[in-house]
Length: 349
Image (cartoon, rainbow, N blue to C red; front, side, top):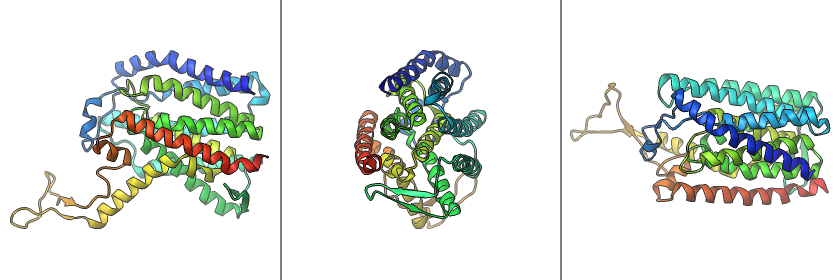
């Protein structure tokens, strides 16, 4: 098993590093540059950095997963291909989003409604396929408690779809600093390698190993200062991969622990927006009249909990460097993955 893990990690890493320079040159040639949001002026210097670099690890992970299934049949199977297809489909949504942004030359692609609908449909199809194949039962394993709670299938589907779509968007939100999404997801991939190994789930082992190797290779180009960004193409692929692995291991609730940074990033954004809306009021001029923007709309202002959201921007404005945020967030994730292992280890004794 160690040989399979090492081979998958190394193969994905080498493929990613090998195709990286050519892909970056191609993205530059095609003018596929990232447009920086106006409310993040501290990132102005990153304007037009090549995006959609997630194709590096998407290609390598796909190649390794397919090769493992074709060459070493006991180590492939329905689960690895189902998780791969799910991740690829979510990556396709990200690609549509990235292409729309590039075509419009701004940082707004698909609408939130369009992305949510596509993500929800994919989640429902994935859950149905695993269930029909006998790989997924309508029960939730509770870490540390060592018990599984059986629930009606329809209720389970609603909860599971919420978890999957939420995970997908949370990883996307985390991708806001150089290397952050890739760095945080790397220990999560290692966690699933371990879980796949102790449970004898070789499809999970192979896919998670390829994921780890691909992300390590991508960080060669994406670590600060980034030469390329993964774009929504990469971040939505990662969200699908992480969620798919959690369900393939039948432990979706563990995402709260291993994905703590994802959760905090998402909650910080939700809290910021909600509190702003609750406290917003018109901006008044010296005469007490509402101030209007260039489109004639009344300018509104509200209170904020954080200096800026998601929370990695808050720490930036507190004086933390991108590298410090990277190492702290990745370190926290690694510790939570260790804790999560002890929370589920009794299940595999």
